[in-house]
Length: 164
Length: 129
Image 1 (cartoon, one colour):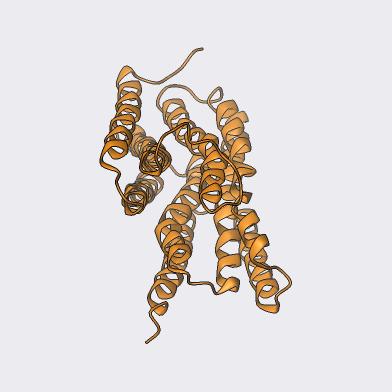
Image 2 (cartoon, chains in turn blue, red; image 1 turned 90 degrees about the vertical axis):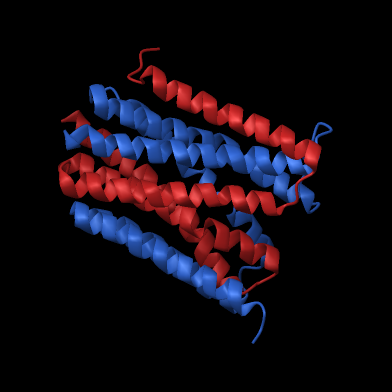
């Protein structure tokens, strides 16, 4: 068995699990057709990109550049959440604020983090200010984890805000 | 700036940031290997799954409607991104390079944030009425 089969299978499984769990959340919440169209558009774009990758139209460089794509939508999400908090009071607003802080941490980090990884592979340049890679691994990935944990805390408050 | 955050919310955030500062300093001294980042990503994955669990309970047990639907879309984005994070990185590090899959994954990782953005937009639109 090819040794690379294992990471490949794990990646396939995680993609399916992500799509499955996420869709189930939307299904239980009763999301409407327009929401499923948004999701379907993403999957369709993914499939188109996969075909372009298969035919060789898009190469390694394009793959690397695609890593930057998530940075585009996040600032809009934070802006909308910031505007949203004025519409709701109390607990809902508190939960929205926590989620937006978590997302803001991740969005602010995203570009420098990726730049740093690429510069380690001699593609971009980012100063390390005399700190070794061990510091930066923990700095970027640790802050990102704190952002996501804070988001999870926000969703926990979302649940408790109505459980009373 | 007016805020609805409680004092303890701010304490949690500051504690988290301090923990990162301490861990990063410790890592600087101990020269921890790159494996550390994958371990830290594990926290993100667990956080993403926890978030999904509370979105599920929140939307099914009481708060449906516009807020529930918007939250489910935020949940989709967060859980997709965090759950594929480690396999994605492991794939890159291991040299597994079947490009079509990577194009699919990169597109959907980006799209998961579009889902978050759209959910946020729904949230805002739902509250306006």
